[in-house]
Length: 176
Image (cartoon, rainbow, N blue to C red; front, side, top):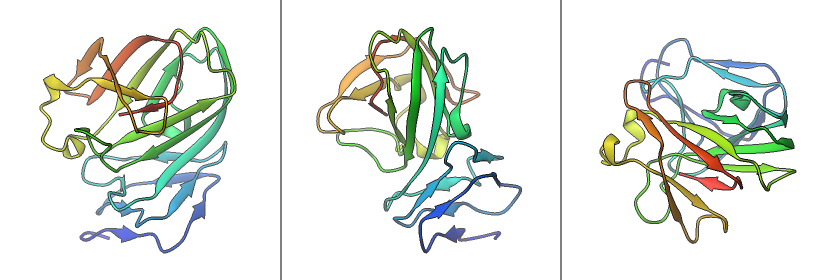
């Protein structure tokens, strides 16, 4: 659809590929997309992507054992860790978190969630920045579902590729 996008009218489960080839965005409209362990997103750009400022999320569940640059479901949260995380649930939402955040967050819940020494790459689109200048971006973490936030900083921001990277993360939880 070339303008005004598509809006979900119910929750959906996807076991293959959701491909964005042209047109406008897919608005979650308060509903959810479950990619399970085999679904994947392809072709998202700033102009054609999944978004949901009114609620809803997209999620994937993967088994991650010593993952090396793994981006489950191609959701935009790449993980590298020497540890076996086991079954890992990743949820991407598009609502601004308390305080000042971009319009994207991830909730990451692995079976093994300690001593991970993980490096994460947090992907975003420029039109999700909510007025925050890219050089000012930092990764924030919340262990209580977004009530309190800890500024974890960043190791690098690739403004051309829209990726924020941070290493040395021992526990995964909610990030924005």
